[in-house]
Length: 369
Image (cartoon, rainbow, N blue to C red; front, side, top):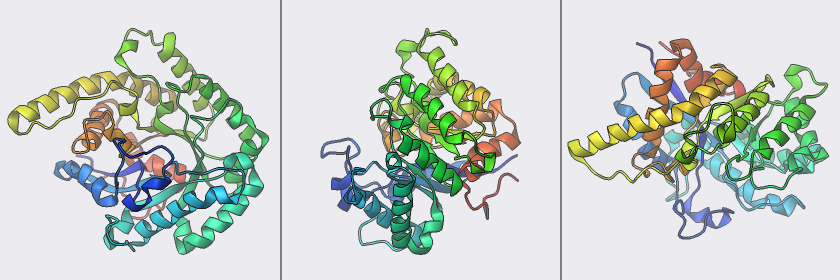
């Protein structure tokens, strides 16, 4: 029997006191309210009952705080986010923030916002300012993200954007690519392909930035597309774009975020045996549906470049609610990988590929026993 330490490669956290700084979350939004480490552990608590599985920790990913790239004033809220996640990693909570000293070990890496379109000089200035605030915690910063899913055409191809990516590669930081092919359009994959080509051009492999694609590129996974052929229509176009992205050796992809792109799962509140039976049936249906995409991603990128991510707490939207959504996604993915890939590749999927892509400290991250 193989056992795995699980690294959740995509987690968002934010305290109640800083909700006003989120660019997307207004009062009344389903995710409005504190989402802390304690809340996250509560969502993942069902994993404790699974033999030979252990949650090793997570990679924190920036939460799209209010920002702009016109001048350094636009960096204020992302820098406050750094202050917040530093308190988590250092185990120095403020009252009511929902984390404790011992939870610091769970924060294995951080992906911060950065003014990527502003170019290498701005990246240098931002990271110097951020590193000064972070102190010794800066060693946990493994990459940056500037969401492009809602940005106009051409953003990824600007000279500044490409220059910043080349700067990241030189300084050994990863870039989290957040595109949205369902809502934003498949053109985003085409632009990302050209962006990576320009960012990698003329560089030795060890100087090329690692690109970590969030949420499988956010394909349209609604059942209205169930009749799409594997090679035509929405599914075929997405597959073609992802295949081109995979042609770049230093691209990775997170198996995450699907609940936001699927037809929503119903809330699951029923307890007892009847509730358990309903959840099991729903899980089987979900596995059958998502494996269409998971199998393609695994085939395209290979088992050495895919990794698990929950996208918590966003997975609660469409995933059945906070009590079950994390486990619904983990269970769906686990059901697929344990039948489709061998034990060595499962270890890569659950932890090793995140270590490789982000340069995480492998100390005490056991692959398998």
